[in-house]
Length: 117
Length: 110
Image (cartoon, rainbow over all chains, first blue to last red):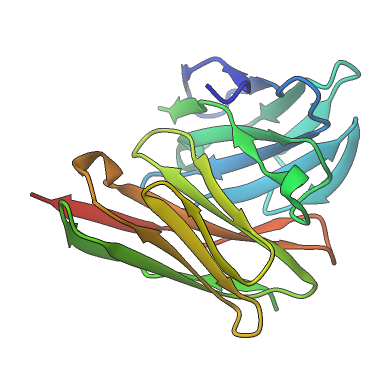
């Protein structure tokens, strides 16, 4: 158990709909990252927050948005859903900013499997 | 540009040793991570290298050569449960992103 929690575990919805995925980081971690992983594909970095502020953006679509709240939990909002948005969405957290030192080791939550029909 | 390369797939035999290579080009390199990911599950942290040399953790070891932009993950006494994808990721202090490789799918045969 990494200490990162994500809800819901599974989500099935229709095209055009909007969903919200939730993530709670490990106790003490200030950074939260969101990733998308389509079937048999690599991890695609979407966005990172550090202590409530957006820190880095990857290949995140304009239909997607995220935020990190004062209690450090984060939500990823996906709107106008398309079939191609079906994927595993992972949240990860780290103590530090990102990438540079061992304190930036990212610990992943179990993921939310999104299916768009 | 920044890039991480690793083989797409490897096959090995139960009980044997396998080495998974990773080459990277990142500006301001500062650390390399290895993760294991079983199908449909979350990546789990295996190792972190920032200095040249070999770091050993039980059956798994990770090596880094900063001058060559090269790392490898060595798995010994392979078990069927080691069948998974292995992800290499490079850290950079020039931006705040971890650059991820596409992963190496390791297939273990009896």
